[in-house]
Length: 482
Image (cartoon, rainbow, N blue to C red; front, side, top):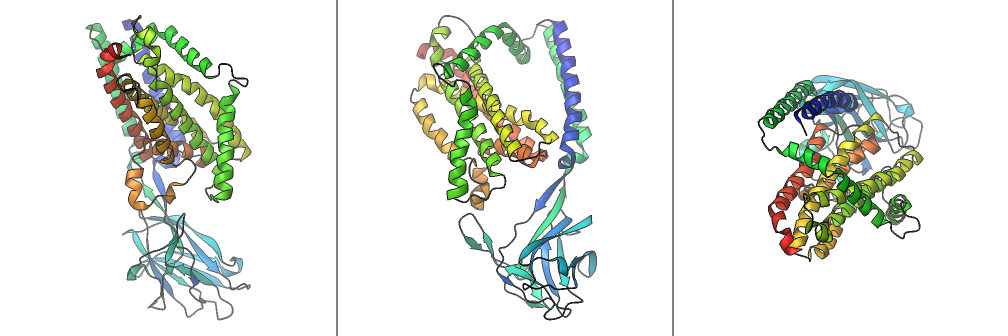
């Protein structure tokens, strides 16, 4: 690499950064500026009683983020056609912040109904009082609301401990339980407010680093980025041959060949879909896409790390005869697995179309999630490759660890079944954050919140840094042990 090509590369990098910053802001949209929050709803226990013109129901609600967008309640009509209006007010003390009216005649029996506040209601202290009345209703021509004191989990009902403030009051008398209400709110995110400042700071950082590279090359300094680019250019043909060899070896003497990249995830999904949606009654929305996304992502990670594990000992004849940067061997194994991963995304696209899941512009963010998955697989793969040289039992231990890792990742079950006191430990799983990131893009069709980007980067590049460091410190002793 000469100084001219480096300057050209820097100009391209700056141009790509500007384009990506603009496209990301367009795709990210509202998700960069705020986060929608929904509280859990209590399970319906019993009706509170007829809400007539002499009835006043009050209850404190907590509005996370301080901006109330809507409410969901469960009402009942006593299996009759009632008339009148249900008046729902949101108050801060004696001050009425918002008021909505529900047509009682349009209410369905024992069903949820939504109330939307437009414009959004600002709650000063993140807590407000819900006041419900029915000025026109009389006995025999009134509706009711459900209350409860338990919450449904994946296995059973769990009783919820409620303070006096959290109970529902009817005409000033505390009732047993609280209203079955789900609070929809919005929390402003600082990232959206300062996005262009952050983008400008990033552009400045890239420009300064480019200047540092150019100055370093002019002084003859050995810089990591320049050395990597030079190595990839010099050994490009070898890398291509290694990737091609690994890909062809996988399907050698196979009748269906590359078709297995399509069939494997689909057949696995079909088996698990039948088991978990029929026998175990999974109620995950769009379960087929949810399941196949998890299968495809974990299959890539498992294949890439397993292939990388033997990348050094399996190429002993090359390593002992010809000098090649040793990190190229695990890197090409992961690159080979990436080809299979790309092919397995095709059946995932078919499932998206079959299930009529909308494909929105947010799908353009998929390369970010795939890149994080690649970095994680490479980091773990380099660590395993180095360990395998000195400790051959690594391959057997990794078989057990990868199986445990699969069950510790929400592939075919929802994260809601994990007890809340274990969620902190559970979220230490890097695959949890990356797969969740990809599912939000594919299933919800929106950009994940900024925190999800930071977590995905953290859980992928920290293992990459650890794996690369261990690999570099031990690579000089590989020849003595392979």
